[in-house]
Structure formats: structure tokens, C-alpha cells
Length: 136
Image 1 (cartoon, rainbow, N blue to C red):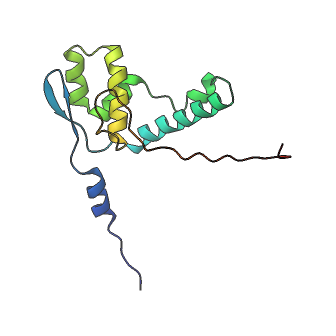
Image 2: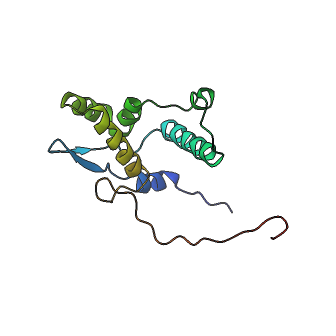
């Protein structure tokens, strides 16, 4: 006998209601979710950047172009069109947009409960030493 799993209920639980943020002295409600394509493009680019860094090299343009997301597009999708337009009208500048993009990204990845400008606090990381080769 097969069981039907209610993915609609799961999505309702995960997305819930939109998070709120304060900016320019007002409270703004964010969209409950961001389209998967945008977030996956950002994650792929982050993985490529991390790999290139570990390899001691920079990414070439052809490695970036497929997954590049402009800053305004990213903030617009994470904040919602109306919020983005209102923030720009109120004078949100480029540097502010960079900071806000990082915070919105954290919020949409479930890391939004920290104080402004702080990364997610994590417990101690257990490191293990691995050896390969001759064991010297």
C-alpha cells in the first residue's frame, strides 16, 4: 500500500509568512520565497568562486556568465519589486544595496535571526586530520 505525502503542507510550513525587515524607519514584508533559479545561480557561482580560491586562481568571465546575477536583480527578487522600488526611491545606494543583498540572502537561507551585519553563529567546528600518501 502506498502513502501519499503532502508536499503542499510541507511547502506551507517551510515558506510560511514573509519575514519582515526595518529600513528607512519602516517595516517591510519580504516575499515568502525566492524563485529557485535565482538562488541556485547564486549558489553555483559561490561554489565556483570557492573552488577557484582553493585552487589559487581567479574565475574567468566564461565561468561566471551563465550564473551571474546582477545586484539589482538579486535584491529585487529577494525583497520583492515594490520594496526594491521604494528603497531605491528613498535613496538606497550601491554600498547599502550590497550589504542588504547579503542580509536578504541570509534571511532567505534561514539565517536571518542574527543582529545586523553579523554572520550566523555556529558552534565549534570539529576538525579531523586526514593523511594521504606515504604517511610521512
